[in-house]
Amino acid sequence: MQIRIDPASAVPPYEQVRGQLARMIGAGRLPVGTRLPPVRQLATDLGLAVNTVARAYRELEGAGLVQTRGRHGTVVAPGRDDATDRLHRAAAEYAAEAVRLGVPADRALALVRAALDATHPT
Image (cartoon, rainbow, N blue to C red; front, side):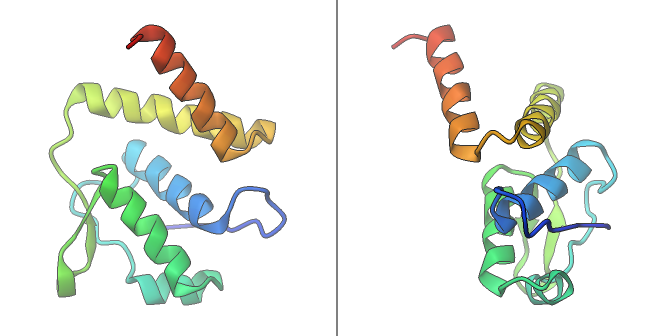
């Protein structure tokens, strides 16, 4: 598993970690059940603070991409359906394009929210 942090990037390090792991999961390069490195180990390997990697893992867990099993570590989660997989791939592509274009994460999210609001007005 290759994760690279670009210290010059406008994208925060936790988001770089989260995004790269999410893309690997979405592409099937990290199959269901794959154990992710412990938070402390990955933080050391990447030269990041433990809390930075922990936040990336929490966000992946919140998205249903991984499960944390206490002392058994964090693993790629099972049980996503085809629609979720397709939507995840689309989201990963959108995120990669936003990064490539230099659009800040908060702006990219605002664009998604606006599109959802336009599709499903309240």
